[in-house]
Length: 189
Image 1 (cartoon, one colour):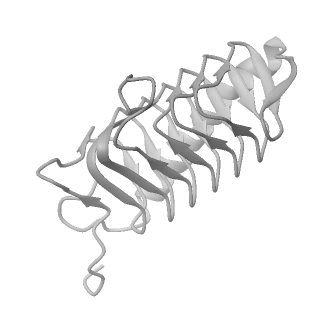
Image 2: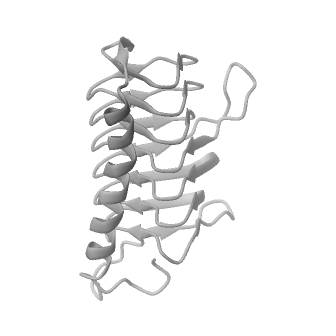
């Protein structure tokens, strides 16, 4: 870490990331601008979270996995705030993209999925890998969706709904272990 100039947490436009003392941000991740990382959140290797145009909030025990991108746009056509909110116990899969959308609590966003401007994914949802949720779409609570564009697949069973939280908890444990494996630079969580 003495030779790398990469800073996992960077201010932008006078706004700096705010984070709890027990978050994990991988050494090559980038958390930029107006971003809030709540208790036990994790941002994995190569992920980028940009709070440049609007605020981004990552909930407690939520995770943004490797190479995922969370970004905001300057404004939404609807007039609603262009912020991104990821709820508690939600997982944003590897290579997924979230753009000015709302992900409620206990959601599993599959690897390579895209959730676009103004979309709302309600609580207790699984988005299958590669799902594209178009701008302004609503994904109702307790369902599994997949495809491009996203379409209803099935109602979630109690086991599937419980597995969402279990997955987030398992990644929290992995984050704790990973956090102990490297010596973070000054100012990094």
